[in-house]
Every structure is written in C-alpha cells, then in structure tokens.
Length: 227
Length: 79
Image (cartoon, rainbow over all chains, first blue to last red; front, side):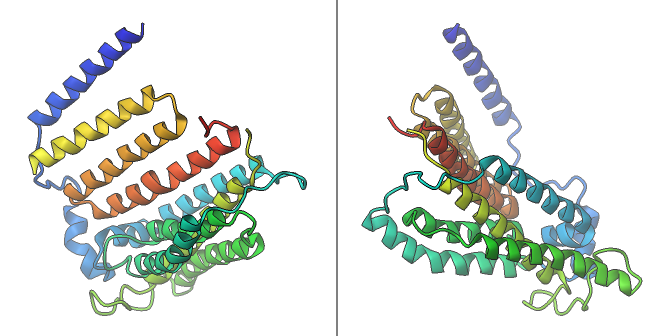
C-alpha cells in the first residue's frame, strides 16, 4: 500500500516537473492589473502599487481581513486558556539564546517598524512588519520563560490600533467621501510623508497584527507542556 | 534563471515529501518551513516581493513557530 502511494506520488511529481519545464515562462505577463498599474501611482500617490490596492482601492477588504485575524486569535486564546498555578515552569534558556534574544530584540523592532512605515514606498507593509514586531516581542519570552508579556498593554494597543483604522475610515466619510478614502493629500511620490492616510492605516494594521500575534504566541508558550 | 527555479522546485518537492515521511515531528516541521522558504524565493524570482515577504514571515517563520509551540503543548516535540 505504502509503495503504491509512493509510486503515485512520484508519478504526480514527475508530471508536475514536466509541466513546469514545458511552460517555464518567467516573463511577467499582467493579466488584469494593467489599469491599476497605469493609474495607481497618480491616483493614490503610493510608490508601492500593492499597498495602493490593499489600502486605497480595497481598504474595506483589509478591514475584514483584520477582523478575521482578530476572530481567529480570540478563538485560539479562548481554547488555550490559562496554565494552572502550580504548573511547572520551563527553565531559562541557555546563554546563547539569551544573548541572541537581547541582540535581536532591538534589531527586529527597527526592521519591523521600517517595513511598516515604508509600506507605501517599498514592498512590505503592516502585515509583514507586524509579524516581525510580534517575533521581536516573543523572542525575549522564549529566552526567559519566567517573564510574561503584559497582556493588558498588548490588548490595549490592539484595540486602539483597530479603532484608529476604523476612525480614519470614518473621518473620510465626514468630508463626503466613501469609507476609507485616502485623506491628507497625496504628497510627493516616493517620499516618506506621502500617499495621504495610507501610512497611518498601515501603522494601525502593523500594530494590531503585531500585538495580536505576540499575545497569541506568548499565550501558546505559557500553556503547560505535556511530557 | 530557469535552472535556479528548477533547483528550488526540486528542493521544495523533496522537503514536502520529507514532511510526510519523517518520523520526528520537529524534523518534519523544519522540512515544512523549507518548503515555505523555497516558495518565498520563487516569489522573488516571479517579481512579487510583497508576497515573498509575507510568505517568509508568516509561512516560514510564524507558522512553524506556532506549530512548534503546539507540538510542545501536545508533548510530541521530544525523541
């Protein structure tokens, strides 16, 4: 039986390889993005067209994406629960992991914030930078299991960031525009303070994603290990 | 460029098979993140750096971390 499945798998693999070899085409052929490619930079003022789509053309989708992430993290937190008071704690990590954590924390913090704040100029943005921020705040917990993340502060940041995203969207409606219409003017293409409210929105996304995932990881790490 | 893509695809497929066959869960997890890492390199070659960053951060980093923590909770991380 196992040999049969292996043979099947190998056949599929061979077919896939042949197909890839036949249709190897690395020339980028845009199928549907021509119109957006042509007009995004002028309309939104963001150098990174992906950001223009994610936050300006499809901002509402991003809000729903954040909602999905929030719901998933909340459900996972509910299932995980709290460890018992007398549960044995993991010992502190060795010297190398502790020193590495001390070295990596500021580095990851800067990299994460850079990715978030330059999301409208270069590849990256709130989601990617948020994950890096979450990793930055989780590594110290990994090195010293005794220290825990301040869950109140984390949920406060998360709530404020989520509220800021919706608030920026609602502010656009005050001026008569649609929900999440970019405000504040486009600025000069390619500078840090450009593309209107897009960097602010991405900062909110980044902080929300980062605090959510850091809280979730810390909670996962705090659960009792089964031997 | 073509040979590089082929090499990455072969590495990805081999590690994907290794995920299925490895007895040690942590080793399977490492192989799984190799798949994601190869995927992110492929995305760079296909000129989709945004997706590549997401794949590297979430696919290779965060999800393996989360799975490792889940294995620790279930007691499947030793041996």
